[in-house]
Image (cartoon, rainbow, N blue to C red; front, side):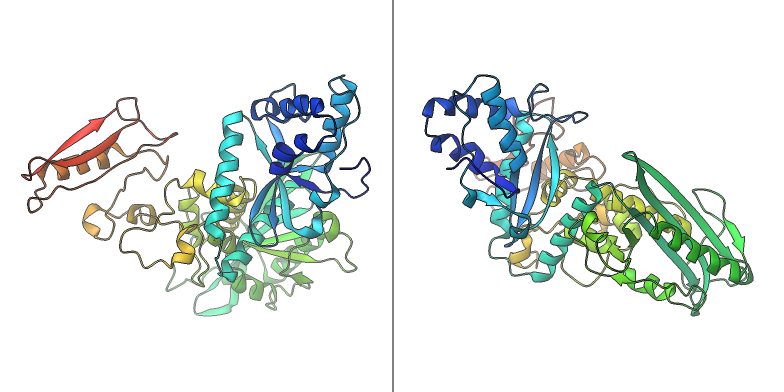
Length: 475
């Protein structure tokens, strides 16, 4: 250990918690250091690392070059801790920092972003979850999924900076001639003094109002978030380019699409003729984006973000309706360009402002990453791949639809144990007779799920002398 450091970066949480105190020259100084770093101490409102306005301890999540995540302290936090302990008289001397070899710089991380923990148990659970997910990812050679996961965390990091403009856009075109544009919608957010400022709108092309789509039901007159504007083709082009020019002056611009290819072609359509320097590679930070020689518009695709969240590397993109369903964002009158832009914006915000990817997935869909019996899911993907029930995929599904049945063990809206499903399983078990052999079925109700009779429950189906079964509930 040494007492001088000129490079700023991050220390692994495990290095700070387990190793730092052991390497101190004066072992008596290790006692107050361990105390100030304890789980419950870190989340205390009076902890010296608590930032004003934060409802917990802010640490960072970083992605290593091998794709594994690490919980991190910043070097500034480590510096402050040692100065605070000495100033308060808890250490006789200013304790040295960990070895510089322990320091992770921006170049050694694929990305990093802040994360806040409110309670000691939440922090402990997060550390366990990070370790669990790292084990799941070991040996995974799915480079497409790894790339999507990287983009997801980069978007979270950029969003957390609260700089620039994030603008979701959508076009609608006549389905018999896709060069004939009929609608444009946008929904954007920027920050002023740390507060979100939103804007949205919907434009209709006057000359094309009588073109009715044949294959896809559209709702041009049903904009849910304001009043639609009917413009001539020339006005339509002017308004769109005016919007793009205006937001380009407000910092780095992130254009947000749901399945980007079609809409990017529409931007190049003569009816729009947008002149943009588009990049499909996100910057390391908003500050870095402002340093480029030519203003650049960065592309973000919510279909790719959702694929990362559900652990899918396939080429088949989820529809906006399905993504919003799984993110619990109510939709109405999709295929209205203004509505689609707004729902794309809300989907982006739901994911970008949420927890780190693996934590977010487990909170949204608990116990959904275990491949169902007989599933053809590749072993390398099954650890982080979300498996939805038929009802979760389609609200019109029923128990008679086959597959994994309609409503499964967990309510798709709340993630809580479904009492109707539990009752059906009990009825099935009570009626079952399997060739003189018992059936073993277990339903575990974990922390944070709905309790049976107010307590955790385990339901087991047991044989009775080889003649049928009975159901026992243990509380």
